[in-house]
Amino acid sequence: MIKVDFKSRRLAKDCQDDRSRNRAFGKARAKKIARRLSSLLAATSLEDLRNAPGHFHELSGGRAGQFAADLDGPYRLIFEPVLTDADREIHREGLVWSRITHVRILSIEDYHG
Image (cartoon, rainbow, N blue to C red; front, side, top):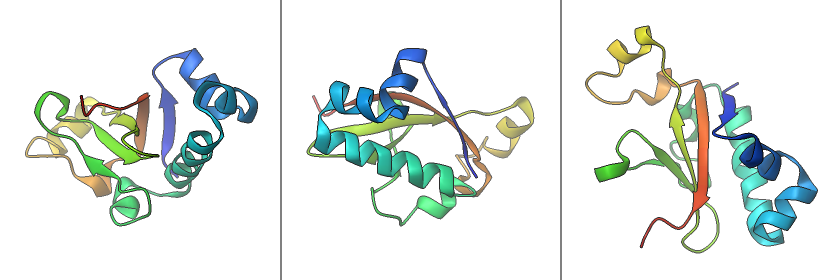
């Protein structure tokens, strides 16, 4: 099971509580957020989600080192791996999806511009 943390307490509340999630993001997006979080929690590593619904993918450019999962329209669930010093050596050449078992949710946004 992937361990999931949140960047802030507010984001955690907005994402984890059904009522807060619906209020913060609307019903349709809230439903997708719940599905993506369930997928993360059910997986043993990010590798399990590489071809799963939700199009989990690595970001590039200024967001290199972060991941996104599709929600609705242009909105994405943005997260990053939480790495220990020992993990950093493993990921030095690039992120190894099969070794990522802890992530931090950063935001829910449309980063396309």
